[in-house]
Image (cartoon, rainbow, N blue to C red; front, side):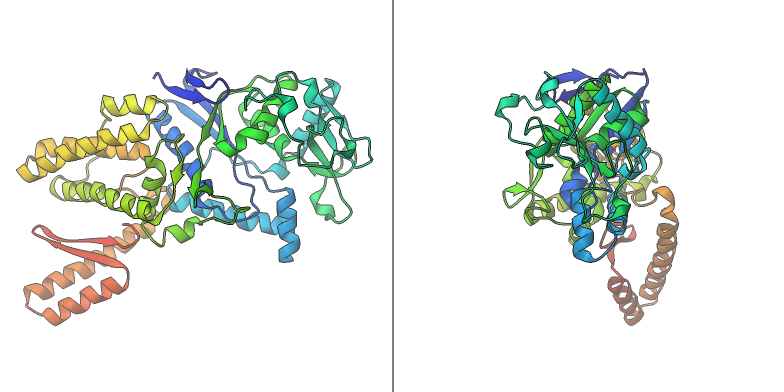
Length: 468
């Protein structure tokens, strides 16, 4: 395949040229688990989920690593505020992250390393940087270790900034630094911090700096050179800039392509816990079906800002209902079948910097043709169209005919379907016997349970209010 991605480092479209032919290694920065994920966080997960699905559809073997930052200043602060051990706070929110993955149909990463499990690799990397003259222990007795930004002439290349124009790094006080912009590789333990949040090192007990964690974990699982490093645009500086500098200074080639998704805004500003303008995934899926939330978040180009509003969410849900309606009606007539092949125009769009909007235009055109085939009763052509539509939807993680059936959750879905189908059949029998009271009673029971019924010439269809 020939795929081009926008590289944030070179600021141009570049062909994806894997380090190992036929394989793609991807690292994207996961959540700092001081709180449950909001839909701004999950947009990034969905971008890389769609990228992975497309690469695998094209026959490539994908290894995708997404870390969990489970030790950090904010996690320790939340533990103090809530009267809980820091690790309990981190684990509760890690589980919430996994639940959000699942409800929006994200495949789990190949591996999801925790920062606390990779301290030895971080200590090795710090030692290498000190030996190469790019890092130094603080002289103020704090136990901190800093990266010397002036020792690396390319510092600032990812974010296209000059060092002298940058502000001081806010991760530690400047007293022990050679330059205020030097950033922490290691943080010495403070007297008010729990002993469990520190590890022994040659520089004293402490814990890793945020930036160091990702460099160490990416190298461990993807090697010293890999294909794609990504995350939200807000991570480009300082987080990714610092990762790039310390990894290159340690002698690694690091990522070939830097891929950043734009933000999801609420009230004209980035959705952020610190700003206080967040919506959790659990809140949003109460308003529209989870599959429609996924559609809403993947429909825009990944480098375009999404301005969240209840109206735009509702419009996306309505648009997806039309897609789902075609698939259900077509499957009733010709059977579900299996996904087929995607049209070349769809493939071209996905290979052009993961252009989902252009790919959706191809999908909509195909559905338009399918609706004409439905009206004409052209079942042979309709079966082929449904297979093509489902192939495209599968790449996007939006096939309504298989939604919720992956990873074993289909057992519950199948059981629910059998129970609902039995009640629908009983209602049909009551209507045939003109027992209207019984028919209405069964419909009311299903409605109370969150099941919507639609009577059609070919029989009764049902859907869960939250998505079938």
